[in-house]
Amino acid sequence: MQGKTPEETKVTMTELVLPTDVNLLKNLKGGRLMHLIDIAAAMAATRHAGKVVATVSVENLTFKHPIRLGEMVELTAKIVYVGKTSMHVNVTVIGENLYTGSRITTNEAKLVFVALDENQRPTEVPPLLVQSEEEKKAYIEAEKKAEKVRKEKLFTKN
Ligand SMILES: CC(C)(COP(=O)(O)OP(=O)(O)OC[C@H]1O[C@@H](n2cnc3c(N)ncnc32)[C@H](O)[C@@H]1OP(=O)(O)O)[C@@H](O)C(=O)NCCC(=O)NCCS
Image 1 (cartoon, rainbow, N blue to C red):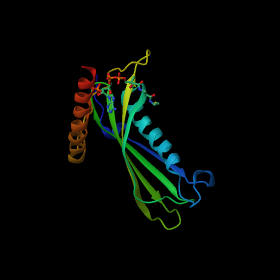
Image 2: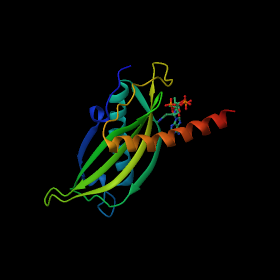
Image 3: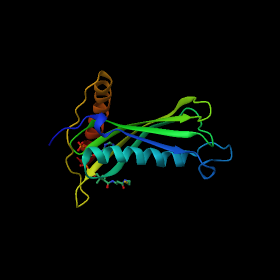
Image 4: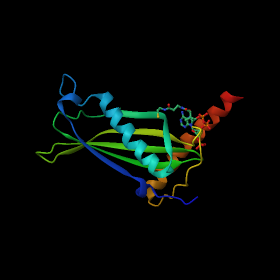
């Protein structure tokens, strides 16, 4: 199977924060943001796998700053590691004030997807061709987590 680079499958998604997206403080609702993060990450994973994917894990979702009504949300989803059937995706969220141009990284999230075949069972994905030092570092970090999950799964199966 031919490998793909993280850049080839990277997804950038933008949305305007509308009145229906905010809470009483006029900040983007956490649940709405989680939805956008899942969609952006799923598109990157689908691009990589070329198959239907399912979310198996969402972790490390941090909320550092609010995003206000009328601001733009920019989500960037990038594959950082792939196993046999799983794909680890990091999502960075930036809030932009369109009037002033001020941009701030508000959230970061790490998600794992599994590619599924026609019987909705895990199926193999192409290898990930990491290139930059940053990509290699993110790969090693995610690989350690994936190994831990595999060991835990093995332990619970036995
Ligand atoms: C996706 C699903 C079919 C996988 O089934 P499974 O029996 O866990 O499959 P496996 O044990 O073979 O694991 C498949 C891969 O996922 C990884 N994985 C499973 N659970 C994981 C978790 N919690 N975190 C990280 N990776 C995980 C495994 O390590 C394995 O990776 P690898 O092939 O790269 O080594 C099943 O978990 C499922 O249907 N989950 C529900 C998905 C869903 O409804 N999502 C929300 C809507 S999209």
